[in-house]
Amino acid sequence: MKTILFAFLFIIGLVNYSKSQVTFPYEMQQAIDFYRTNKFIAESKNSSANSGIEGSPYLEDEFVKGSIFTIQRQQYVDIPLRYNIYNDDLEFKTPTDEIQALATPGILEKAVFGNTQIVYSSFELVNKIKKGFFIVLEEGKVSLYAKPGIMFREATLPGAYKEAEPAKFVRKPDEYYLRIGQEPAKLIGSKKELETAFPDNQDKIKSYISKNKTKVNKPENLIELVKYYNSL
Image 1: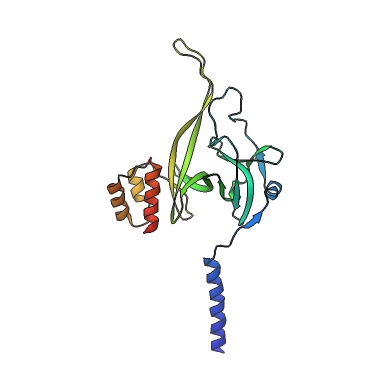
Image 2 (image 1 turned 45 degrees about the vertical axis):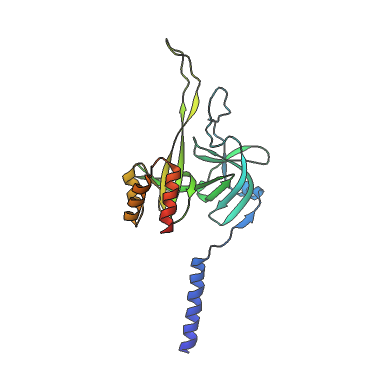
C-alpha cells in the first residue's frame, strides 16, 4: 500500500514539475481574430501626417507586417504594426486601412515586426512604478531594453534675427533599462548604476566594465555586457 501511495505521489509531483518547466507553444490565430476580440482606440491626432509638422513621432513611418504574442499564449500573425514613440502606442492597420492603437497593452507579451521586438513592461521612474513600451536589445536572466524618446517642439514666429520655424518632432537619445526577471525595469543613467544593477557577480561585472571601458550610452557596449552576465 505504501509503495502504491509513494508511486502516486511521485507521479503527481512529476506532472507538477513538468508543468513548471515546460513553456507551452503559442496558439496561432488569424489577424482578423485580433481585430474582432481586442479593444483599440483611434490614432491620436499628433501624427506626422499633420500638415506643416516636420519630423516623425514613429520609430519607423511605414507599417511592417508582424506578430502579436499575448500573455494568454496566443499569436496573431500578419498584422501591420508600427511604434508611435511620442504617444508610447503600438499602432496597427485594419483590413479597411484604419489606423488604430492598442488600448489594452497589458495583454501584450511581445510584438515582433521587421527587426524590432517590443515588450510592454513595468519600470521605475522617479521612485514610481509605471508601464510602457520598450525595444528589446537582449534577453535572458537580465534583459536590456531601449526606451526611445521624442519631444514635440511648437512652431516659432519670426524674430528680429531669426526666421520662423515650423512645429516639429525632435528625436531624443535613447535611454537604456535593465530588467531582472519579471521585476520592473531600471534606468541605467551612470556607470555606478550599471555596476550595481546586476543581482550578483558584481565583482566580475565591475572588472568587465573597467576592462572593456563600457559606456552607459553605447547600446553595443551594454549588449555585450548583458550577454557576458547571462553567460556566468
